[in-house]
Amino acid sequence: MDAPTNAPTRASTTASAKAIVTATDVSQVYEVRRGFFAKPLGLKAVKDASFTVEEGETLAIVGESGCGKSTLARMLTMIETPSEGALVIDGVTVSGDDPGDLKKLRSTVQIVFQNPYGALNPRQKVGSIIEEPLKINTRLSAAERRQKAEAALAEVGLRPEHYGRYPHMFSGGQRQRIAIARAIILEPKILVLDEPVSALDVSIQAQILNLLADLQDRLGLTYIFISHDLSVVKHVADRVMVMYLGRPVEIAPVDALYATPLHPYTRALLSATPATDPASKGQRIRLTGELPSPISPPPGCSFNPRCPYANDRCRSERPELTTHGATRVACFAVEEGRIDGV
Image (cartoon, rainbow, N blue to C red):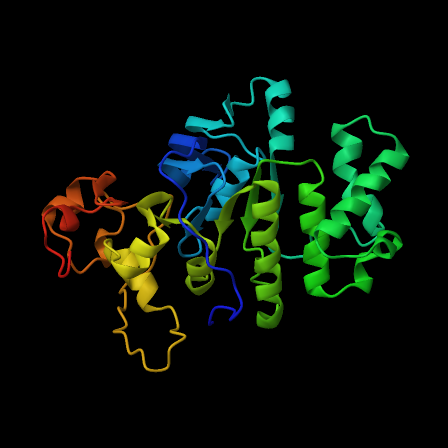
């Protein structure tokens, strides 16, 4: 799908920006039970993910279904705590050991879900939906909560009379605006946007993306934008992290990633993105084979069964993220110069 024609283009953040999120070897492993007497298997949804997010930037996380994007979102929003590794958000370590820390961070980080139809309680009026975070996390009076809710509605382009209506009375784009108003009501520093426009019509996507860009500028928000749509990511992100089977394989500024992708997986993803220029005739890179099981990932580089550049080292040794200019990439073929154009 082509990018919305009026979507904003983000500028790169400065190198001096402070990291508001730091993940070090973060993993999330789920137990998969096979019966009463069989030993549970470990499903490695995210494994040894290390990255940072700087204040005020938009970090996009992309990859195929099953790569660990949504699991990472649940950890960043404290819906789950990491099985292993260290996750530090705004100077606080997410461990689950101190409920006070988690309560503080839940005001710091909020999430906007993919489906605006399923994210709102159909039995509650819009005002009650937006005020709910205030009821849980503050001691404001009913009048103060209503004042803040109406201000949040205005921030997202809705009117005061919408306060007393039910979600079914709104379009999909308006419902997503309501979800965004609920997310910003606690004045968070970070918004995790989990496929925030994929359920909307293309004509509405640009409006929501422009709204998010305006809110980021006005409120100084940091965005973690999770998406499978690389044509949208190109217009909203400052940096992009590409994940494959639970691991980051490439992290780069958006301009560098789209101009010179290094990892073979990144190249394949970009080659599958529809071009907005009819004269553009890029070569499609087709990956063979299926995504391996996260229960039993292949040894070495997890991408090696599908990679045309894999050799014996790739099949036995796992590559770590290394720096190549502005890009960090986990690929022996890049290190050894076995990929054309690198």
